[in-house]
Figure 1 (cartoon, rainbow, N blue to C red):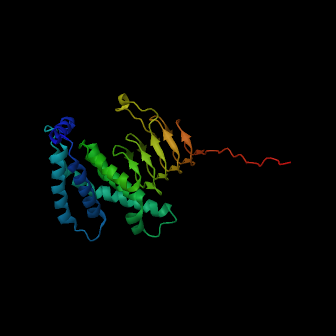
Figure 2 (figure 1 turned 90 degrees about the vertical axis):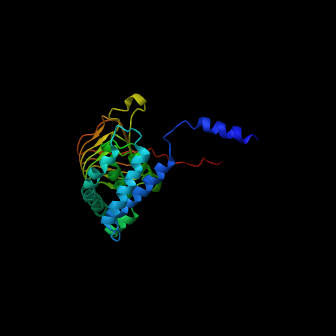
Figure 3 (figure 1 turned 45 degrees about the vertical axis):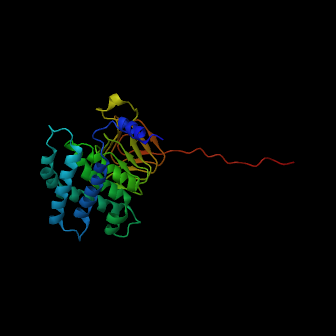
Length: 264
């Protein structure tokens, strides 16, 4: 075995000069610290904000490869948004308590509900996504995805009092728009009707209007698809066209009874 030759060949194929997995690890540290700062009653806010600023500077050094974009200046504007983000997350938690008869307390929602955790990390990532902070917002939501099974792209736009029940297998695409008081269940996909790179700058994912409930394993596709307010989408439904307000959509299974052959 020519060890030096192997090392040289590996180096030749390591082609991405900015690919540092330390960024992924530091993003996870930042995300955890941010979550505790907002929710944990024993975590001191003032000192943790200083720690968060230091972690944010680390992320800037690792993620902002374009020196023309002053990422370091984003921290002050981001931290100013945290009270409003927390206010909205409290509304999400209250929506879950009000929607789910299995929830025994609001503390349980904050600590044990994967849907709430995924929403929390999405909202924290979304503000960085909006100002164009590179890669970190996606790493934040992917961290939540890995822990919860809920995949929310940080580019999605989600209104107030959002509830995800159970959560596993939920997919919400980058250009999806979800308005207020929407409830979705496990396995729901808000996805694109077509997958092609040239559609990157177009709206590819559906719009969900106010007070819509989408039950388990429903699939709703397409950037022009609008689910009208106060509608109910039944489990296992497949939609690629808009639905008028106050509609109910349901999947009708075909049931066949298996009979035993006659034995003479």
